[in-house]
Picture 1 (spheres, rainbow, N blue to C red):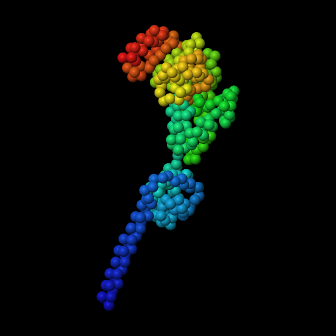
Picture 2 (picture 1 turned 30 degrees about the horizontal axis):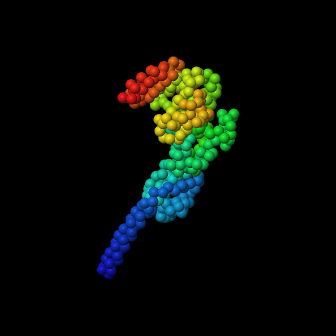
Picture 3 (picture 1 turned 135 degrees about the vertical axis):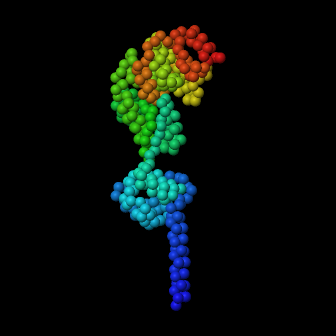
Length: 336
């Protein structure tokens, strides 16, 4: 009898050890990532969704092995109801603990895009396309006046490009952005940032012309310290009908990624060629930031007609009153 009891006890111990070992193995397997696939899957958790249903959603999207284990594990180790409603980006390469950490801390998915100051329309389109947010071709096609109803666009012809109005900033564009939703965000931001500036006067220039000049100043300046001075040079040239001779307008015309035009480039017939034509180009050539716009409105009043960016003095802008002085500065600060 004693032998039988000992045998039963031994079997019980072995079964217990086996079950404990299996339970530990199962427990660890359930917490491991399903695969090494790092693709992001959008998961929406609506307010009021039960833990059981959240587990089912995650299992259906192949983000975890067992919805029932998820529910049990969450209830056992984490406070019930701590999962927050929202839209998330999760991956099969995440462990169960990583997924729960995202859900319980409300790390709601966001998609951001930063548009640098002075970017041209096609550069913005390229950045959005490179991030696989929207099509470059579609963005350029839609970015014209007739497709949007902002009040500050009134008076411009329907097919005028939105160049100049796509305000440079960092944007939260949502998980499923469209071309129009992104452009609208930029136009709304432009309106908010410039609403108090649109009645400002710079000689006889309209605000659109001020914006056009600011777009040139943005592309021509190497630092914010020089923008007011550069704007002053262009204002002086406009006042005497002298050609602006802006390399930035040639770059806009040729679409080259080279700020220094060739002699042939400066002979291309176009209203954007400010070497051949005096006055401003017909539209902005970039999307200036608020500092460039303010620097143009509050330009520095001086007698300079020329400037250059010195490669010998940390890109400092050197101003000149006469062409002869300008040539001397070129020899001094660039030709050496």
